[in-house]
Amino acid sequence: MSLASVVWYVYGMLVSSANQSCSGIAEGVEEVSHDTLNRVLSGKVQLLMLMQKMVKVFVGEGGYLILDDTTLQKFTKGLACTCKLKDTKTGGFILGIQVVLLAWSDGKRCVPIALQLYRGKDQTNKHDLALQLLRQAQHLGFKPEYVLFDSWYGSQELLTAIRDMGWHFVSRLRKNRSLNKRQLQFFRPTANWSALGKLKGDIAVVVYRRNSEYFVSSNLDLECSQAKALYRIRSLIEEVFKVLKQHCGWHGVQQKTIRSYRRHLTLGLITLLFLEYTKNCSNTSIYHLRRLYTSGRLAPNKAVLERFILAA
Image 1 (cartoon, rainbow, N blue to C red):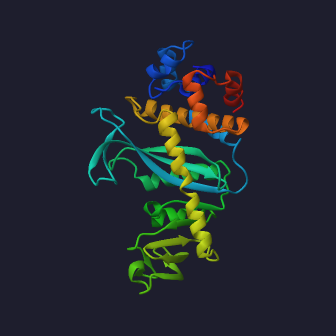
Image 2: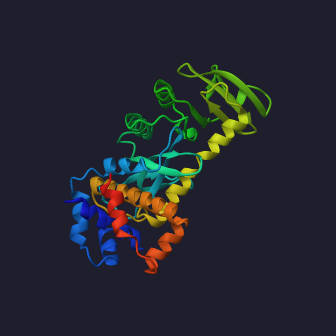
Image 3: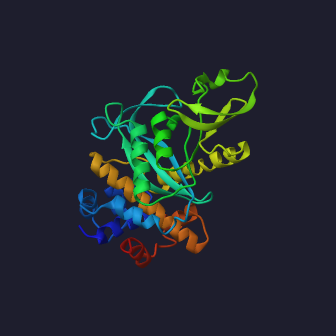
């Protein structure tokens, strides 16, 4: 399989409104067959490595690394890549798969760097997957000002690893976490306070309580307003998930093996990167571009797409 097939796959993802499967992508592109696209999912091209080289077009010095995950619900039983997952919205269980994503941001833009798939409690847990992603970023030479994540990822192991890498973090903590061996909810009787101390594992932090929210950072000089502003940057990854699901083939994926599933999702990341690149060049939005592409009013510039992918 050549990179030319990868170009066609991404081109099909751009122009097809039903881009969750090889069949759907092929329907939008006459020049390529279902079998050719299917071979991309079973091929040997290192798609994640290819994507990470493309990221360098967007990444600047410093910036922030953002960790989060999203659930892709499935309704077909018996697929090797799906499992029962807890639905945080309803409290029940759904069939699906969770994607743990690491993204880089400069505070305005947000671009994905790498992903890992969580397939249930019998597989590697999400904290270990998040740690793997951070180590990949370190290997790639990222030197973020802060790593940002919500309270679910604030485990002792992850916080310790981030500090061992020489990075700082900003997050929120749950009220039952302990500071100086005392639970935050009982640390002080007031609704607004700040304190220096240590979390379990001898992790030195500053904690700010604002009503029912607890913000934490390993930078002891960080003020509350700065910590809250940095934590808000974390929400940029939610927009990335929205675009991936609505426009880059992540919603309704119908792959039967974990390998083909992972490769399709990675191709969705590459599609997002090209949309981001094109958006910046044409001064428009990703949503507007996709409407033009799927309606046939505008075709993606295949020569530019080839250069974008082959240059990596």
